[in-house]
Image (cartoon, rainbow over all chains, first blue to last red; front, side):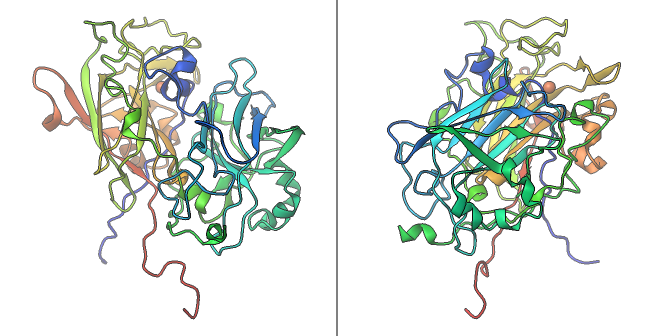
Length: 204
Length: 248
Ligand SMILES: [Fe+2]
């Protein structure tokens, strides 16, 4: 016998279920207790950098939009700084929240985030990663929240040098991680849980 | 801005144990079949994007946010059902308390009915029960809230599947890598071994980790019973030898 390593185990995940919006976006479901939902606005005033919007739909393996999902995104400001207690590299844009949460449209399932184009942040060895946004998807039928990343189709040079994108074995799946510029500051990023266009999900 | 090129001082998070956490595809829980990715997840060590997380200050909270008995009730009235207190700590895998963590919770009413327009169970709504609350953990990671014990409810999966009484939890840690949604069950509920959603868990130990025991020490005599539910988030690495390049 040896000594015990007194570590705990992470709580097991369980699905967010069909009513995640009651708990996380109650005003969206008509329950007004908090006076508004968290994560509906990513800006508290004028922000630095390029303002953009990202819209998309989460599809299941049959191509049907999810109407009971919740998508969260988390990103740095335009200078690559996170509005987080763990940010030690400088002072992030005080008017930028960095975090957004969307219940998706009740009939179409479309989510939308009005945000800024993120700056680049370093890889652990100091090399820069391509600008990206972390996305996290939960819903009924999803047993453990799915992490992915939103990169930008119009950041070709940065994408070509990105430590993660360059190490992906199936390079033909990289477009599933790229937000497509549709018009001005508008980007499209659909998420496919399954099927031929299945989004690359991360264990990170 | 050369500062931005400085490698992070935050330490990474230990990998999620995928042999412990449920799989994406669990056919007995039918909805997972078409909502589960089929390709392998792409594994990478955490970076700043996952080692940082939004900050939620205590100023966010209203006085009744953690009191589901009163937070939707008309003045002078309260939600119907067995009055309970749910308390515990948010910890990381190293056993450290996680302070300042936003914890959100939602549940059915005492009859097993959610306040939602897509909900069709015939049990009645309670006009004084909204079904959601939230709080932020204290310095030692502790939290508590007051509510009514939710009822079990039937759901369309098999021909006669019932969910055990449960409360849903959403938890933020200090890094987005720790983001977690789970459910709390109640000690002694005979539906626990029958539930296909609990059945996705890979061991009895994992099931036990989500069952809150009755905690008589924290009851309020003649008022409310108490259940204890600790939540464990991924651990943050800590070592003096971190990020040290060879030869240094
Ligand atoms: Fe539920």
